Length: 402
Ligand SMILES: *Cc1c(COP(=O)(O)O)cnc(C)c1O
Image 1 (cartoon, rainbow, N blue to C red):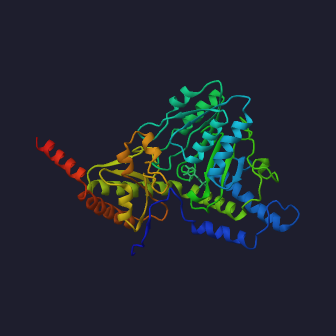
Image 2 (tube, rainbow, N blue to C red):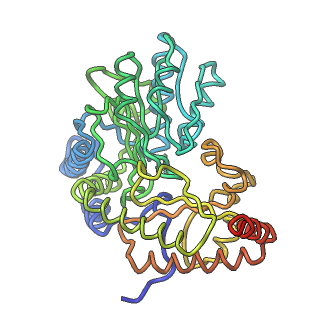
Image 3 (cartoon, rainbow, N blue to C red):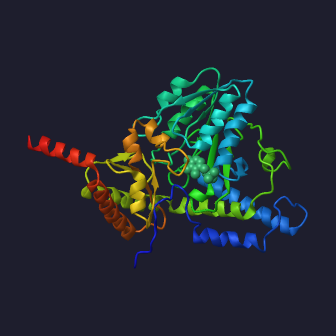
C-alpha cells in the first residue's frame, strides 16, 4: 500500500476519532439529541441512557463504579477540579500539597494558583528518567499534607510513574492521591482500587475519542473524597460539575474506553515493536542520539530522542511531511527549552535538540521505515552545516585512534 503523507507521529498531542467511536456518536448528534437532564420525556431518557452506558464503559476501564465518574470538558478541567476542589474542601485539615515539576501544566498551574492563595506546595524533582520515586513522596508528607498529585505517565517522554506504590503510601498516611492519567489510561492497565487512587483525570481525545470531553474519577468510599465545585449551576454530576452534559462527546468517550480495554494489550505489543524499530533504525544510522525517558518503564508509543548538534525546530522544518513535536517550545512566545527535559537534568542544548515521536493506532511499519530514513537524512544534512559536530567528530576520531 502506498504511503499516505503527511505522517502523523504526534499521538500524545491528540488522536483522531476512531471510526467506531464516530459511529457511536453520530446518532446522539441527530436523533438522540435530548438533554440528559430532561427527566420527563423519551428524548431526555434516550440521552441519559447513552450517558449512563458511557459512564459504565469508563468505569470498567478504571475498575471503578459508574457513580464515581464526574464528566468534564477534558483533563484540564478534571485536574483543576481535583486539585482546587480538594484543597478548598479540606483547607481546615491542612494546607500542604505534593506534586512534581514535570507534571502537565494542567496540574502545575492549579498548584501555583493555590500557592498564591497560601497553600504550601512541595515540588518534587523527577529522576534522570523522568520518574518520581515512592520514597520521595513519602519523605515529603507532613501532618499538613492533604493531597498528592503525581501523573500516571508523562506526555513528553512517556515515562511511567510507580503509581501503585505512591498510592499505597498516600493511603497508609491518610492523604488523598490524585493522578493525571491522561496519557496512561487506555495504554497501561489501571485499577483505582488496587492502585489506591482517590482521584484520576483523563481525556477522550488522547484515546481516539473527541476533543472537549473527559472525566474525573472521584472515590466515593474507603475513603470518601469530597470536592468544592468550580462551576455553580444546575447541580449536574452530583453537584460537582454543573452544566448540560455533552452527550455525544460522552458517548464517544465511553466507546473509546471500551475499545481501549479490549485492544490495549495487543496494541501495546504492536506499538512497542514499532517504537523499538524506530529507535533502532535511527540509532543505526546516526551517532550522538540519546533517549529521553525511561528505557523500559515507558509508554509503548513514545520515543523522545535528542539529536546532538541539531536544533529540533530546524529538524522539524526539514521533515515537512512528518508531524512530530520538539522539546523547544518555540510555538509559545518563549524560546525556553522543555521544562520537563530540564527537570530530568537534560542540558539546554540537548533539550533544544529533542524530538518527540508518538505513535498510535494507525501507525504502520512502512511509516516507521519512512520516518527513520527521513530523520537520518535530515540530521546528516543539518550536521554537515554544524562546526560543533565537525569538532566532535574530530575528537572522537582522535580518541579512537589514540
Ligand atoms: C493532554 C493532556 C492534558 C490536557 O487534556 P485536555 O483534555 O486537552 O484538557 C492533561 N494532562 C496530560 C498528561 C495530557 O497529556
